[in-house]
Length: 480
Image 1 (cartoon, rainbow, N blue to C red):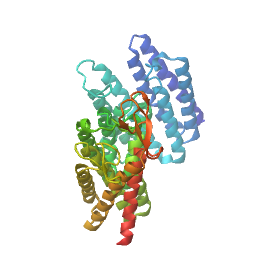
Image 2 (image 1 turned 120 degrees about the horizontal axis):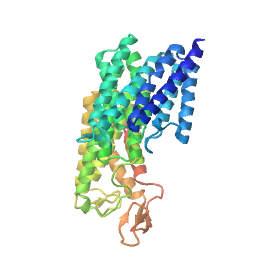
Image 3 (image 1 turned 30 degrees about the vertical axis):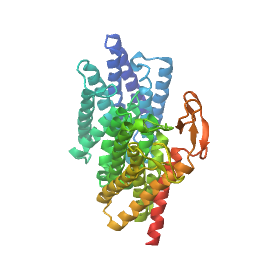
Image 4 (image 1 turned 90 degrees about the horizontal axis):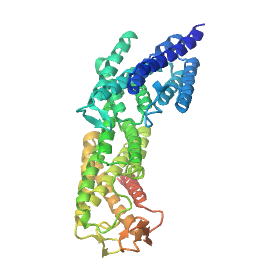
């Protein structure tokens, strides 16, 4: 009987929320506000379902039912109060999908019901009122990211925080005010970086996981707190400065997750230093671009393959370290990222050099040609590799001997990178202007193959070079 009442009340309440949205729309309230009223009110469906059904498949069945109905209504445009502009239209479906996913998880983890509720509160109140406040401020709005405003961000944080506070008090949860603050700030940050209605999916799912950690693994959470709170803002900076493409951002998030959960805040900070110093080297390279006679296959924002080529080996050996706690794997990981930064520095500062030598063909070469080495670039590689390992030493506290081994391996990796670039990396020559290029086309025409192996591009070279440095560490430690 209790479950039957749960079905009845949940369906009636869902109909009530849609009815309120329809009514406010007919009374002249703009659709953008009537939609948010539905968004805010529908979140309280969770209290009905939790009270009558608990963590059961009935809870999931109701969520799936609403997911199906909202998807059909999106296609048929049944409820004008639920519809939106083209770019945000799937938002209601994403909300129901997130509810269904969290309901399914609570079937396996019944103690996830409270984090489920916190996620719903942050989505309905925080995200809902963020939209209303952001739309109210039409003039002099401070844009943080895309169309997201500072007022909307503050509204999302404030309503999430007070919503969590009331929720925690009602259910007598052992949550401190700082923890509530962190969850609310995280919810507002995720809402800020989520576009095209995806905040209705990303906010509840990420807050669910974050809240679950604070409720049941509170001793572990401080070790990853820096990464979790700062990652959304790193996305904003990377996208604003066109440092990463969309695929590059997704790949960076993957690496960020691996580094955070294997090495904690230290791993995140190391990755952040690599991105920061890498951006500096890229800026130097752009200033010296006029001296570069060779056009690269990829330029501008880094895509997913470039991100993974520079950080994939780091993630692999970080995972090996997390699984085995063998220090040699940590050293291999640190050497690989030091080599990647050294190679980036060599490319960036090498663009300023007037004389470049292809050491493996013993002849001068054009500045910017893969495999070319210059004194400036070589010194930059050594210096930035040492800088990366110096930061690593502060974070992980190892002695001078491992530092020397890793620096040697990293520098050897940059030399190996030049070898691969000279001997193995594919190169083309433009049939129109005669320019040597790494791309298959130039001046709108197909370029002639000029040397190397057809399937070896710069991304392959970067992966092999980082792997060479990591394996060199393992070999050198065997000798010691």
